[in-house]
Amino acid sequence: MVLHTKMSSENPSSTLQGDNIPMSTSSRTTSLAENDMLQKLHLSSQEVLVAAQKKGRSKCPKCNSSRMFYCYTCYVPVESVPIGDIPCVKLPLKIDIIKHPNETDGKSTAIHAKLLAYDAVTIHTFPCIPDYYDQKDEIILVFPGKNSVSIKESLLLLNNCEDKKKESSCEPPSKCLKLSQDNYKSEKQDKNDKVKLNCLKKVVFIDSTWNQTNKIIADERLQGLVTVELSERKTCFWRHQKGSPETYLSTIEAIYFFMVDYHTHILEEDYQGEYDNLLFFFTFMYRLIKDAKHSAGKI
Image (cartoon, rainbow, N blue to C red; front, side, top):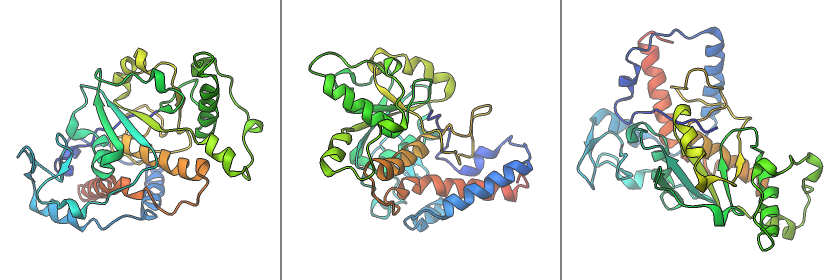
């Protein structure tokens, strides 16, 4: 599941207070793997964030609140971060993020997605969310569970819903049989088959901690949606929730990995870093916090 972030937009070093847990050998190995992955990203220059970090907090151009890097209420960079220096990521799909009302805005990486792909991303605060029932043949929900499927399986299930839409309502994922690899189209499918397979229009993510998620996922407006789990991805988040698997990603990680998988497995195109800038703020904070921990002798 996308299990979601607790990242402060304030000075990252402040998040280290009380964190006295030493890094184990396995943690060091994981850290090296994380760094290797992050080093391979094609990111825009982060000098603007370096400069803003040195200046400290700055005003939001809309509400005049004092923030670091960006305003998590207005979804805009602060005055010390010129908007022209922030990358703009074009996404092939619309994104809806459902945020739990108790999630602190300044600690959510969902804001990163809105800042970097403004036109494609909409953030809703639960319980004020859309009713997706009439669009369930073109929307999927990224969420782990016993009925969650892969991205390729989800597209086949959406096609099934689309074909049955005029005849009857689509069965929820719990009543859909798991699809075997034998059901997949050949990689050499013709153009018309590919267009039919690519019926997805919007992806929904939940921005919440594990304990807060149950009420959202049980909401009737989300019932019947095909659910997808990104089970092969591991988080690099610096404040991963204790006791949860490494496959539970922060919101921005989940959006990024989903887009990469969609690009390669559904669009069937070579990935050349088109969505790497979704991690523009995330990677900067990651390195800043790692450096702070190292300086404090906690790594």
